[in-house]
Length: 341
Image (cartoon, rainbow, N blue to C red; front, side, top):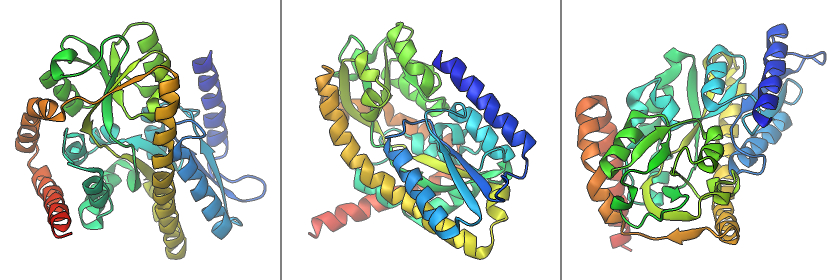
């Protein structure tokens, strides 16, 4: 029923967009539509609401910002396509989806690319590293404007706890639709099952898959903890979500407007990250009340299985090498800073 309602709602929205190509209502404000696949109380949506408040506070005489959470405008694949065409202005996209537009994004799907959240955050905030990546999809009609923290990705399962890579043997695990993620599961001995995020709960419930891999909020915001009772901190990835914007819309902003929007994008990231830490703490407590057991395996055993993927990917995609080396350099700098007190 929910899927049918979403399709009906999406049809209504798209029909309205088609009829009203300028995106303007009778009050002559231009509507800015932003889609995401998370719940209304999710840190991502909290960040977007802060953006809405900021933009309307600065440019409210011209723009009406409207946010559509919970896949109301379709799956991420759908909303990326709508952003490409300009039917909507912005959407939150997974790194895995962006990889299909430019394989430069493949670098972030490498397991154990980052040794700590500090390294991860410093890299993502480094414009020298990120600007070429963010602009790589302009030829596809959109560009990335900021990143959102999605924590660490870990395995969670219905019946069988994951204490070591061997426990994944033969299990059907949902992964994001990415060649890197599929290969990662092969190296770990599991059976990768790519599917849209909105389909995961039902697939777990019906036994189509044995588990998935995601952050702690998937257990609570998306109710996966109702089915999966084991969450294993193997910490195999720290993969950002990315806010992308329609290239034509962005290029038509005046210099002053673009400056305001850039400030707004920073507000999204800052607000979302602050909300993220609090949300993870709450999610873990809620998950425990759902009888989810948290497991802390030996991470090195998982690393050993998947690190060969780094060499495979870098050899197949040489343009990733300078980015990869810069990321490693950031890790080295952080290590030296800690050593020097």
